[in-house]
Amino acid sequence: MKFVVIGAGVIGSTLHRLLKRAGHDVIVVEAGKRKVYPTLIHSLLLKGEDVWLARRTLELYDQLRVKTREFPAYTILRDKGELPHLWEEVGVKIEEKYIDWLSSEAIVTRGSDRLVWIGSFIKSTPVVKGEARLSVNGGKTRVTVEGVQLSADYVILAAGAWNSKLYPEVRSKSYFCWAVAAYGPRQLDSSFVYDYELGFYSRPLLGLGLPLGILGDGDVVECEPEERLRVDYRNLVREASKRLGKLTPLYVGWGHCEGSPDMRPAYGRLRDDLLYVGGLDGYGAEVGPAVAEMVVDLVLKGEEKAGYLVDRFDDVQDFRLGREPHELP
Ligand SMILES: Cc1cc2nc3c(=O)[nH]c(=O)nc-3n(C[C@H](O)[C@H](O)[C@H](O)COP(=O)(O)OP(=O)(O)OC[C@H]3O[C@@H](n4cnc5c(N)ncnc54)[C@H](O)[C@@H]3O)c2cc1C
Image 1: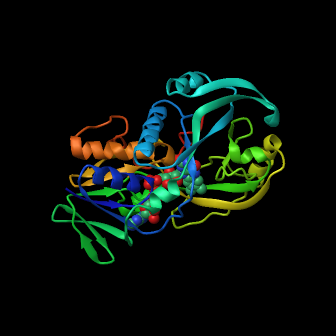
Image 2: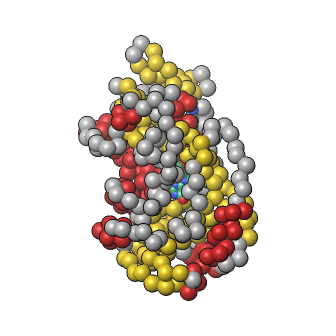
Image 3: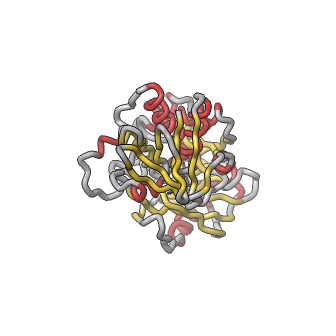
């Protein structure tokens, strides 16, 4: 069969590999609207079903030879409930103890957190460059790129924050997402910290042993994908410094993410020959490949994973974005 995938993010890149591996023709169209960062976080420290999506994603990274590297993680969280038990189920090693350099009790986890070299994965995906446009003609979905029509049995919409621009029936919104690279203590580049008391996370920049890390707070601010917001990172750096010691901000990385009405991933049919996959809500590198695999299983095997199907939003008119789903209580 012939597939046209719109968007070469983590989803489009995974779809390309999985569909090719199953022996199909795949064209991925990429408009170059999004900055690609070399590394992103992959964590198993999530909630509910997401833990299993993240576990499956890790297996897919392994199969697709995407480089990942593990680091210890320190989670400062008072109301942890059943979470440590859930994480142990997927093979995470857990210890709770006082950590001198954080001056706090923390849940120390091993086997939970990795940097994933998503940049080289995405950049090695062969693409047709240009902005895809979607239309429906004679009951068939048409994709044109720079005036040239691409024929396909199936079109897969995987354009992240731009999905609802391309096909307004998609119930998702774009939001602004940013993080600050900072210079600070040497532990920055060799560990993950999730601090739910002070409201920040830090992660290694590249894990090369330099005292450099990335800080963020997981805030969601609705914003058109063409718009760039002014970022005030002073409060984030001030709060993170209370825990980590002196931090010097270096630059701000930013981009747009796609949020769905319930802030959960979604996939499914929009038309007989048009599929959608998205709503990755700031954790696409953590769960995206497993969600991409669900689309492939839907088209090739007719399998459906209830709970993730996009038709759960059929009755949604307008909505406000909530918290990113990987944020813990
Ligand atoms: C600063 C920042 C830090 C982040 N950190 C993390 C992290 O550490 N871990 C994590 O898991 N997630 C992180 N995220 C979120 C993660 O990047 C997203 O969840 C993920 O990129 C979504 O993947 P996607 O494939 O759905 O969409 P995208 O990666 O947005 O890809 C969609 C692609 O479609 C293209 N496109 C759009 N319109 C068209 C068109 N008309 N024609 C052709 N192509 C088109 C775009 O150019 C883009 O390349 C971060 C996001 C930001 C902004």
